[in-house]
Amino acid sequence: SQTIHQWPATLVQPVGSPLSLECTVEGTSNPNLYWYRQAAGRGLQLLFYSVGIGQISSEVPQNLSASRPQDRQFILSSKKLLLSDSGFYLCAWSRLGYGYTFGSGTRLTVV
Amino acid sequence: DAKTTQPNSMESNEEEPVHLPCNHSTISGTDYIHWYRQLPSQGPEYVIHGLTSNVNNRMASLAIAEDRKSSTLILHRATLRDAAVYYCSTNFGNEKLTFGTGTRLTIIP
Image (cartoon, rainbow over all chains, first blue to last red):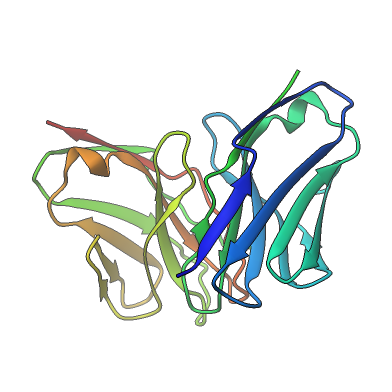
């Protein structure tokens, strides 16, 4: 069966510090991968998606970046965090014609 | 991009059916309609998706209008565990889902 792992579950980082969130998928190959962010009390905002290794599409210009170094690994990064980067970050995967499977999320607080 | 619109909130009594509406008036012919739900501090959970015909699974039913410009998620017998934010979304033909603010469903015991 397919599973998705996302870590850490919570993170508190100072303004200006770097960020690295990792997501891995098991049990499938060549999935589409996504990073979403959810601000407190708001809906889901698509940040990045990837249809293959090294292929990243950015939806929202900001100081975040994403990389896909392996087929089932998706990384969200920042060189310098801003207060506005606080939120609930969710990784997801899908295959054509199927629903999305979301990870359990990382709650990031930038202080 | 096409958008989906949903009511901000709805209430329903426990053990009664719930009909959650969604408008997607600019949907194109190859776009799937997806529904997800989210509990506090959790990732969204897949509920159901469909293209043209009505769909049923163990969680819910999806009724799609003939012109595909709207759909309704049907929970046949609501329980307290169904209280969540329900998101309707469409994938715009390229597997990229965008989500609105969803409908917060409250179940009244």
